[in-house]
Length: 456
Ligand code: AMP
Image (cartoon, rainbow, N blue to C red):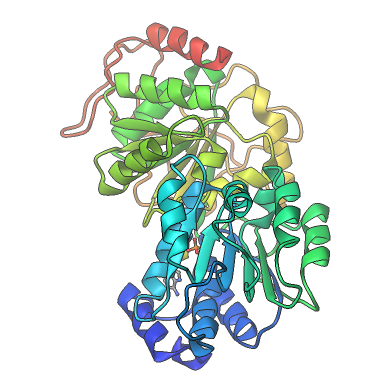
């Protein structure tokens, strides 16, 4: 199937061609014709499937083909609600890119930045408004925008909005929207709360689904390294340095943990930045830009800060700590392996996290492959129910672990000489040429600083 067969306007097809997309992704193939027909939609699609274009392209087409006389209205014609500022910025970029040949104005409003420039932009009148709920309510309260002429409403990452406690805000916003409108709800997972929201929001919806619920992207190779908590940082530094990973996104559970880990990795000689909710929007955008350019090698993020991050070809995601909610694991690993590209998601799992791991495996309906790195064997053996299983697929080309483990074999991965410090007593790692070297000189120092991090 091609984009041409979907019935999109020539202006949109031109913009899509500019992006270099050759064919629509499965969610685009399913959702675009239905949205073009004017149907309400309930879509299950995780990040990385091309879901943003699946609603943005038909939305632009419908607004473009049903043009209103140019007027300065206080109300947009389409409203896209998203949970985070990062996602707002990204959806805004997509709207700009796909709508570049259409006479359409859009604005992005989110909190954490000055409201003045947003007000000025809204005053000039916009066709498409991309907003986070809280800041949109601020604008509605100040009368800088109304929603009376909204024809199309998109709720993106509905499950995340509910997780973040936005339901009351969403209800207030819905109360100001016209009853007659087209509504699309996108959500990676369908919890009972999401289903209830869908029932309240949508009229005679069509449901589309591109991946079975909660199934991690197939292109992502997933791997668990069981390791004691206090040795995770050391292992991570080595993996990054010695496997020469150019760009890696690392997840921690807390903001404090993100800061602490970023500081420690920086001390190990790795160019690292942290992004989380306590950082200003400007600082987060700066860190992300440096990461995308390659000036920063490691980006440490909390779940919320990482929502909506769109980084082309991100090859490695590391779970420094497993998330408390199994669904967040799926969101996290969705940062890599996007749009069909190979990616690798590694989780450093300490014995205290085995229960969380079991929850994730239950959700994924399969056991994840586990490799114990020599020299980093956890002191507590895996409990019953957390089964050792080795990788069945050939590993990512940049991953240089053992390639010949048989089914059910539980022996540890053997890394090539010089790849990783072989014993916790070694003080000077063997350094391959031109590879950043972790700077700490002994494991004891590393361990004691790890304690600080985990006591956070
Ligand atoms: P999303 O799921 O919307 O976050 O999109 C994931 C990534 O896929 C983005 O970087 C898009 O630019 C890219 N993408 C979207 N549609 C296509 C397509 N049809 N072909 C190739 N890449 C695409």
